[in-house]
Length: 436
Ligand SMILES: *Cc1c(COP(=O)(O)O)cnc(C)c1O
Image 1 (cartoon, rainbow, N blue to C red):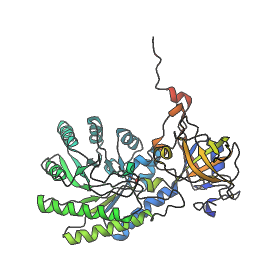
Image 2: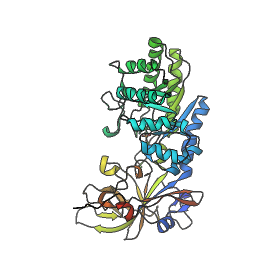
Image 3: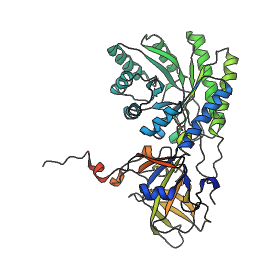
């Protein structure tokens, strides 16, 4: 029996319900593979984050890290929930612009922003440029000079804290490609450059220690470290940070053996750590910004697939193959991410066998799940993979020239198509024939 699905998530017919909609009906209406978001779950998570700040009576921003799932509809939901957003490319920025997202609530991140991207950000008056490296200071300075304007900035530092998580999703250790190093004095040098530049208004400092983090210690550590840096900057350079941005990375439950704190509990601990540390250092309480991505959209997303072929080899775990795979969710192949999958027509059906859930892509590594307990399944059955909302569709590819799936938002029993399924013509729309 799946522990993640409660009785409230079943229709009268016993089917998996997502946002008040019957998952089997969604699969029939929109086809599979299909990505479905329970929108009220997205809203509730943003609201829970905001509530914890309000209860602690601190100035804040909840900035949704939109790389987890970027779409016009998603920026619209974030806007309606009073969130800020992080963008990391011209493409994400463009999507936010087209969604009508308020630009003053956009933070532009990235460790190699191009001149064109910086120009676009300045032309559209984004709220904050998160400065990552010395090259960017020079590039941004030139862009601001040529446009005769100013912008608010924050400095991303590498706090030297390594979170206990997969090495591919760690970012806070000293040897990281992101941000200014503290120990060697690079962060101080960057601060001085920015303070000396009248076109850049320094708002505060930022760090992000990684993703899918379960331990409180890493977050408390980064909070304390950022306050220490703020105190050092005040003492050394007379600069007082208005904002301390602790990044995102709050871990979520993918499988039953995961037992993370609720995301807002991490944030509560961060707020309290910053409060106590600033009072020790005699600093005014700054605004606290967070950048959750996965925790906002991950649990709200479901991937619906249809069962096709099957391979049984005596003595080995069978392969049950679905009509999607690494093209719509690369995470299992990329870093052995684990998920749980249920039979959409009866999520609580007793488990009959343990299978490998295989994708349809031409890679032996295209296995969505190495060990999934399922009832008996047959071709045509719809399977629902849970918690796929973060870094699934956003990392989708057209490998093997498979079209990317459609995305549906479901809320209060209403479903809306928010990203169309790619067509075969979409796949060749950028191809040009070769005159030989
Ligand atoms: C990816 C990223 C986040 C979001 O991380 P999650 O694990 O999805 O919460 C936040 N801030 C920065 C700078 C990031 O790169």
